[in-house]
Length: 495
Ligand code: UDP
Image: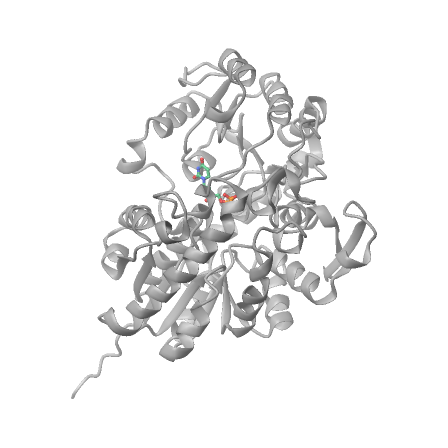
């Protein structure tokens, strides 16, 4: 009898060029490979190194199923500094449009590669949010195209509501509250200032929002780094609201062991963190980090710092952009925090890249002060760590509502305005909160942290909920778990 073997479907995965997009979408690629798909990740030369090192840490089965293809990024043509291949490395807001121009040119080169150079045509494309050209390429190749936003289903649902009903345009000021009743009976109460960048008048890529919408409407489906049991019925609601298939395939960070691998351990910062944590009691440490690029204005950083150094709990604090802080803040940090990882120090300050997934899964960590980026939020849930929410920008104020009010696994610091960001156009924009004066004082921070780390009955309840979610998170990617089955469905949709 002749047996016909169906070839494995070939996924082409094109991450949006931002650190926090690359991390989860490459993990999605790894999960697809682990489920038997052939995967090509197409990215720029500098990002290809990052992608390859992540792939290499995922075991032989995955590594052999993934090809990383690098295509030059036209920085010189766009007038960007050499090596500027991620939007978070763009030196100033006025250069952001140039980055998007370069990304469009990159898209032409990717399409040319897929049409004429690639040894095998894709059966399915998964593209990051701002690669708005991807659906045109997919149509020409005759393949389905899926979008990866990096947001959770709840935030995507709220954004869909905002795009359709525009409640933010009916209020008189950026500080007036309105409801986003995307998931009744829960009302998500926000102000205009707290909305994701595309809803801000100061958005640095306003003229591209039409392309974004066209892309969203043209795709065959949405891939979400989340799991169905986490966000109530948000994935089903999102599918109904958009008319698209929605595949929740996370938490994707669980695609590999959280322990440090050799390449991670090579970083001194990573080693220092782990050795310092090893010397702490279980669940005693407060971990503080604001994502891949979150920076606070100096006055705000000082208020946070004063709260952290007076905490009774050991603190592991990741500070981005420390080199560009004013001298007085730098010397305060030097005097009040430990940069070397002395085992008995109270506040370890990490100025580089921290091994976040390994930190969160260390038994010493008992709470996470986070900016509510979705990657960080889900990593915290997967590790069973409750959160204190300090949203900075993007969809993080919406995620805060999910963490604190919907799921009940965190406390709010009480931040009302965004912290200055590259994509909101910084200080000049309506949305940029880059003020000299701190919005949140040290005492306010301390109160919220006490509730997180030492919150009595309510604190116990939060811990219980997040530990239940951790157990579910660890189940969903195993055989017959919801995310496992959604990965299989995603692969089936390409056959
Ligand atoms: N991250 C990390 N070390 C750092 C800072 C960030 O590993 O020092 C990782 C973190 O684990 C997460 C991602 O970077 O996967 C940040 O993504 P998130 O969506 O939370 O925030 P964003 O960077 O988009 O603001």
